Amino acid sequence: MGQDLAEKTGAAVGPQQQQQPHQAPSRNVADYDDAVDSLLLRYLSLLDEYTRLRAALGALQSTVFQSLARANFTAERGVRRYGQDYYDERMQATRRLRVTTPGAGAGGSPVFEVVVHSPEEDDKDEGEAAEVEVEPANGVDEQQANEEKPNEQQQQPAQNNNKTKKKKPKPHDPLRWFGVLTPMALRAAQGQAVEAVHDLVPRLATVSAEMAGVEVEVRRTRKKRAKAVAAEEKRQQEEEENKLEKRVDGRDKPGRAEVLAE
Amino acid sequence: MASQADSKDRQFLAVIGDEDSVTGLLLAGIGHVTAPPDNQKNFLVVDSKTDNATIEATFEKFTAERKDIGIVLINQHVADRIRHRVDTYTAAFPAVLEIPSKDHPYDPEKDSVLRRVRRLFGE
Image (cartoon, rainbow over all chains, first blue to last red; front, side):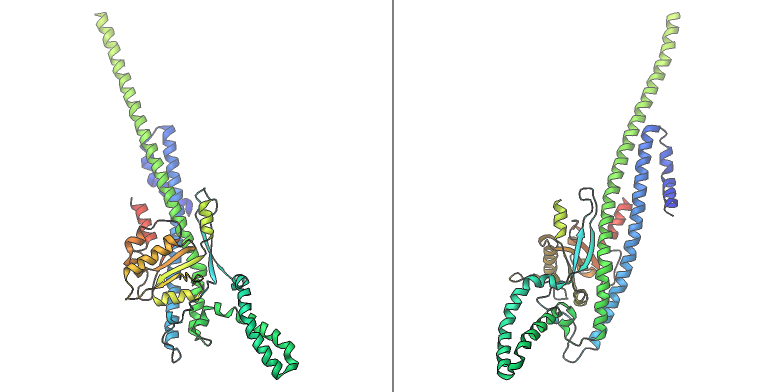
């Protein structure tokens, strides 16, 4: 398939090559033609992937919107709309980017990836502060426990610690902004949005960056080709001029010999 | 080397769009508010009341000022409102992607990547 296309594009360029019969420079031009063709071939396959990803993202986005509309339709009383009124002002991203640039300096285009970021990584830093806040509350609980049930005083702190540990990850799930019992449709919207963010968006960005890289290469190669063509034409002209001069000289010489003979 | 170090810190996706687009993407877990006192959000909800200057300033902030954003997602109809700004943006980081919204399906004619394609073949 790829070879066929290459041959076709090669055939399209063919006539231009035939106009340039000189061996050494024309090989250069042909090389540039081949280079441009193979770059364009790569570009077209990237474009194909880009349009497919675009279609997939469009379809997925529309299912997210449908799910959100359904969630709003079945919303509990009091919930005006699942939207910005419920966003947590201290939200922390649980899905983050990882950007890698292979072969820096070699013109390698960046690769985007979305990875799950576990909140525990941040909690290590924040954990100490959180514990300080929790401890006074524990103290109050313990005092109450001591007064009421002195026998359970050893179990109480352990339970409290477990509770705080379990509670920590909850605020990181955006679904919780909208309450504890969220409609199924909202969960569906979340699942679809995760798919879009995880699979399609980073790939689209990667393909787009790669396309931009190939565009630069194509333009560069086209310029080189144009230079090669110009250099070759100049050489052709010079050769023709040389030939003409030789011919003129060739005609002149017998003419002079005749004159001399006479 | 500088660009490699630069790209490593770009760990967030940002979004400029209508409420449903932003809600959907925030549900996926991309929303982030930096620690106080900055409290910088990586999203902007655009409605009919939002003026173009705000959109443009936010786009500028996400693409030029903030060094922790790797991809900016923007609704195509919002991008249309600051089209000159989006089309003249050529930097590698952050990548800008136009996405469809509920009321405005994706139009390939306006897509900046496909415009680039046409330019490449039309030259």
